[in-house]
Image 1 (cartoon, helix red, strand yellow):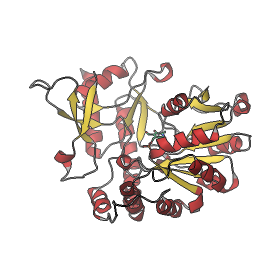
Image 2 (cartoon, protein in one colour):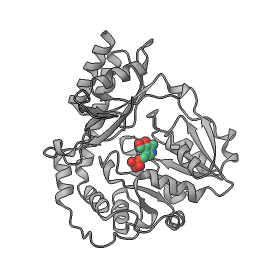
Image 3 (tube, protein in one colour):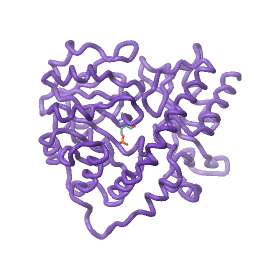
Image 4 (cartoon, protein in one colour):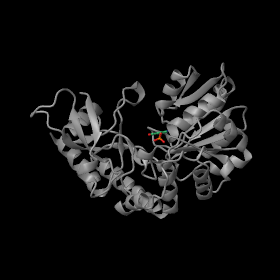
Length: 363
Ligand SMILES: Cc1ncc(COP(=O)(O)O)c(C=O)c1O
């Protein structure tokens, strides 16, 4: 069934103006009395709903911007803030509208006209979409049966740039850094998509200074709980950053989003606290799912990649949850069509999810 979704700001303004966890879902087609909209909980998009009300209130009340003027051309002030926060130089940072746009700019810049882009499978579906819409040739490299990465000798010489999603969406696993170091020694551009890195025990930022062929992509959509402002950034050697900037539009990131992101960094203790909460809730939800016989992969993200008990169809579970107002992610691809991907929620939501699952499995 298809739906038209709309964020229900009004209903939740009193709690948190940017929290789109609760949305009204409208069945498609003409509305009539039997087609009443209903509230649902979205655990299918890996947004972060564990930041507190005070954080969002601060970000909005701190706004001091002049919207009659164009924004800064390439978000220079925000690049400085980000650089200070992650411990790199401002000239090693480039900002765009979400990491989706950052990735698109990187692919278009780093893969020449007849060049080849590689990425592992299964991974984030947008890589193939960007490549297709920009006529970029791709090589898909299958992950091993345990979803770890295969040896690099079999493919690395045939590609110009390689995307490594770490931790990987949807498998939730972080890539061993020794593997990334080995890739960086080869003649290939390595693009590490680290949009979930804040939830992980490892990241590659410390490799930037010594490796000109490394580009890292990050976002404010996940750990920072700001998917709505669409801010992503690249971190790399300054020569690469200058090339990326040549391939992007000036003034493309709006003043409001830049300002909110800077304020989020100034108030980063909220994000740090929500990270602690997420890790706790991730363990809690994972244990809850294992108690009802789900097989859960060890996650380093804000979501769980899990297999329902044997003989239970994940699509059936997802449909039953949807009827009860909870959305989770299913997969059509053969290798992972027996898995579900579930965003970690608040304690109340995690409890509600487990309760509904127990009920569904019992019926
Ligand atoms: C692996 C991965 N990369 C990039 C993105 C895009 O994030 P953004 O909201 O910054 O565009 C997502 C979004 O879910 C993702 O899972």
